[in-house]
Image 1 (tube, rainbow over the protein chains, first blue to last red):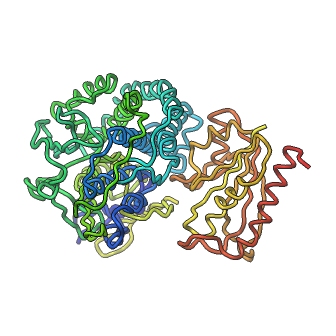
Image 2: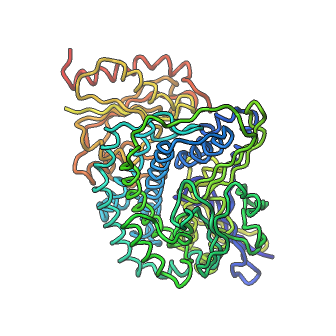
Length: 474
Length: 154
């Protein structure tokens, strides 16, 4: 009879999850599963609501990435209106989306993951957090705070609210950008560019310290998917989807996001509320793909901004084909922060950025709308069907983190097989398993409730059900 | 002299919205120049550089009623930068941790006080409970008195 080790709850992630590590009769790790344990039910309870409420309703899915939901929802509603969005509104939506990506990536890298990187996977768990870094690494903490603050301020300055703003609306944005706000943001660009540049320099020099984790943290072949421009550039707002292979070749290109149902299947597993999407043409077993910063940089030919392009060229040299280790999500996040800052500067210097023409108005002209964008954690799909009065009849959401579900489970199994020694569990072993999940930066709050208690308990049972070992983190 | 009044909490969780409600009330009052009022759903590290620029900070939050304590009880206490590790850190920080971050990272922590009211309910509902609502004017009076004392307004 098999045995099972539970990691409950997984810490320093967005939302709630627990991990089961299943042992075989010989005591070796046989399987591992990431359970997302609470259901949100947005797809169901938005039925019956007017379509124009969808951006604000679905933004409540998450307190970390509400802007992503606002954008995907508004894009779906744009299709229902069948209007042409003013170019200035598109530039402003792009800007706020990048502000969100910067703040979210900074949160994961500096607040959640850097304690593992700087204090060690075996460090005292009570001190392995941002507070524990104050004395030894104050500059890193200051840099993280400043980058996150910059991203949040971009959101707040554009939308008058840091969390759950209602500025992005069907048809465009609610109000134009004023010159003072534009200048405020632009004036801070040199400072935050300097911060991310020195962070990247430090991180690249540190990579040698993490070779073991690079080798063992969800490092396996898979597909990668992300939006790209027609030229194959990095894209977070419009564009079409590109799917590339582990060898780095393009498997499918310029897939229309509106036709996602033809190439993405949505499987459901009994052990988790998170969907398990897969690339349909290859089937469930072979169609596992990864999304998010690692995938976006793998599928993109270039970024389109000077410094980020240099960094991307270096990044692409990490492996012969695609960069396969999910540990490199951290590296990719830093490059995307750099890109985001440079791109915001470009967008705010566009000639029409202060135009008053930022919203198109219309009634219901289509009974279906699909909005797709790149959220910090990957590709986000919102798909609505409405009746002639604009009342939602059905909604389908594929949340960015869900796209990574199959890969995250496989990654946890890989790490568990490498690190977990069931004869004597240590907190450090299990932290490494958790750190694999952290590398993906899943936003489980998008599919679960996060009520704040992040204790962890691990139990190992004998085949007869007898408790062999327990590890508790308060 | 610079003072930050910081009301925080979740207005969708009944009495947890106390801090935001009190701060919005205070923002509508004629306060001395140099007093800034802001609201947050949660405290986060990005507040530490802002706190470091302040001479005084006033935190307003709902409190769990301790054993035998009546909901609506007003509590006022001085805050000091945390010197030991907090119990757990996720996205939510307590005021003492933020003060420690302000002091360690930016070289200065303001003198700080916490004004709170023991809550009756943290249920998923908007609006304050009758007990906390009844105590709110007195809490605001206490905060205003503190401001007047600091700025010597009589």
